[in-house]
Each structure stands twice: as C-alpha cells, then as structure tokens.
Length: 441
Ligand code: ATP
Ligand code: MG
Image (tube, rainbow, N blue to C red; front, side, top):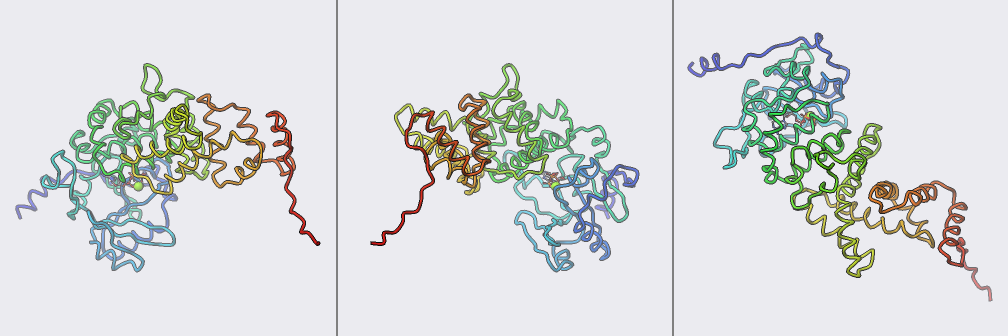
C-alpha cells in the first residue's frame, strides 16, 4: 500500500503525443520491428520502439537498429518467438530473428542502485527488471528516452525529449556529472549523436564532458572501440573528431599517442583544414554518404599513418631497410594503440598490409607494378598514397601514374613500365615472358 502511495506521488509526469501530429517517418520502420510489437501486444503485453530509433524517425533519418522494450520477461518473450535467443550476462535480453534481421527486445529495467556502482561511481551491475517509469530513468539523453507505440501511434515522452529534439539540443537525463561518471562512454555517445544529427552540445555540458574525459581511460576497450567505430562510419566523423579534440578527449582515448598533435590548427582545437586526417575523415564521410564499402583497416591505417611513418623514418636513418623499418614501425605503433583500443586481428593485419604496400609504390619497373595492382587491398593502398601527398611524402604525378596504370589495358601497362624504365635509365625493356618451348630433341 505504502509502495503504491509513494508510486503515485513519485510518478513522473509524461506527455502522450499522437505521432501523426509530429513529422514521424513511419515508413522507415523495419517490418520485423513492427511484427514483433504487434505480436507482443496481441499477447497482452505493452511494447514500444524506444531510444535512438524513435529519435531518428522524428529527424527523418533511417534508424540503424530498432530496440524494443516490453513488460514481458525474457522467458515470456522467448516463448512467443520461435526464432529467438536469450543473451547477456549483465542484463538478460532477447534477440528475435526475423528474416535476416536481429531485433533486440528487452524487458523494462531499473536504473542502477548505489551498491552496484564502483568506487569511481561507475555501473557494475545493471540487471533489475522494473516498470516503464524505471526504464526511462536509466536512459542517457532526453532525446533517447521516447517510447513509441506504432499500433496506437502514440509517443510517451517523460523528459521533454521532443521539445529538445525540436530545439536540436542534447540534454542529459538527471545530473550531468553523475550520469557521465556512472558510464563515461556516454561522453562518446553524446559526441556521436550530436555529430550524426547536427545537434548542439550546450557549453555547460561540454565542460562536464571535458572534466570527466579522463574516465574514458578506464572503460573496457571493447565498448569504447565499438562506439568510436560507430562514429567513424557515421558519415559525420570529421565533426565528431573535431568535438573530440575540442574537449581534449583524444589524449584519454589514445593515451601516449598524441595522435592529433600535428593536426591541430594553431591556436585552435579543430583539425587543420585540408590537413592529412581532416582530408581523410572528409573523404570517409563522403564515401559513407555514397554508400560505398568502407574498409575499417583503411580508416585505422590513416589515423595511425603519421606516427608509423615518422617512426619508420627513424629506423631508416639507423640503417634498416625500407621494408624492415616499416614492419617494425607498424608493429610498434599498433602495439601501443592496442593498449587502449580493441582491435580485431583481421583489422590489425589489414593496417599492417596497407602500410607495407606503401613501399611498393616506389617500384615502377619489373613485375612488381603488375602484381601490386592485382592485390586485394590495392585501391585502399592507393587512397592512402593519395593522402600522403598532403604530407609531402608523395608526388601527385605518382598517384596519377598508379591510377592510370590500374585502369589501363595490359599492353598499355607494359608500355608505361617501359617508359618508366627509360626514365630511370635501365636498358632491358619489360616483355611479357613467353613460356619456354620444350626441347624435342
Ligand atoms: P544509434 O543510432 O547509434 O543506434 P542509439 O541511441 O540508438 O544510437 P543504441 O546503442 O542503439 O544507441 O542504444 C539504444 C538506446 O539505449 C539509447 O537510445 C539509450 O536510450 C539507451 N542507451 C544505450 N547506451 C546507453 C548508455 N551507455 N547509457 C544510458 N542509456 C543508454
Ligand atoms: Mg540504436
């Protein structure tokens, strides 16, 4: 009884808004998400699309994923959907598989209680089921705490998220500092979401983010890497990295690396316009905008190139060969990065390969150019070569030569190599080798 009374008085006011009065893009909702909600509701449960998906639908952006929340327990959800699986250790959620889509369905959960925080105030456990009112409190931003029922076509808004979205402003639910300390990854999430949707981060919040930045050094590498990767492929990576620099977070995300120091504009904290990383991120954003395939290894090779290249030069000066110097420099820098960043093995191998391929762009004669253009990573390696013009490491004419060599037919390729041979001063022209005739004697 007492609990009920406390409940009545403490219940947060919320608005229930008809989605038809807002500019919500219903046709951007995935069929599986709708089907799951319909089935849950038909079985008597509450069910909503929640979080980033509602925010994106209201901003006319196609959501990356759809999260569904319900008052059904994981086992009850699992029993409803034949193709589903309960996952998660910290908090049990259900993955429902429809077609080739996986939709995450979670039970409303409570925010963390104080004994589940560590000495820094970070969340340790996060596994208590609750009501929708509890669930809304644990969410990070007002714009991420909208609950949309696509059947009744109503949005439940507990924290004026719709108004903040209209103002295009990021507002943290609860006390900013506490919420960022509780889970420092929220700092990167704010940057990612602000950059993605062109929202403003108010000055006061920026200051709190700057102050809490050091805590990024203690969060699990895999979580941080996951969110940074999302930022890199968001199509707004340049804006995102400018925020990271502005708030001095680069030194906490990649400690000991000073990754961006040569890239900062003098007297400012933004990336230098048309500098190496600026251009790389700008190209990346254009590629994402054009739905081109993005190579994660390429992104990292670009981010770490200046460091690798500098270290390589120091080995060359010590008398090591070009190739060995590059091998040693790549391994060393990737090892440093790996201390703060979670890398999949295939991506490490990819970065190493892209760096080592750079040395082969200096060989214009012999068989090397022919095998280089057939290499699976040739085009990514060429893109890195093109960016190196910005660092005065490569001449534009060489980039043009390789682009032309890649595209032209075989007989022209032979001609190009022979012209280069003449320029270099070697005598024997390149000929396609004929198979030796077997002796008949
Ligand atoms: P994206 O467009 O990248 O998917 P998102 O906000 O939907 O952005 P998700 O990781 O899909 O991000 O999370 C779904 C929802 O879960 C968020 O909108 C938010 O309500 C909640 N959430 C996710 N991560 C956190 C966090 N670290 N702290 C609090 N709430 C979170
Ligand atoms: Mg999402």
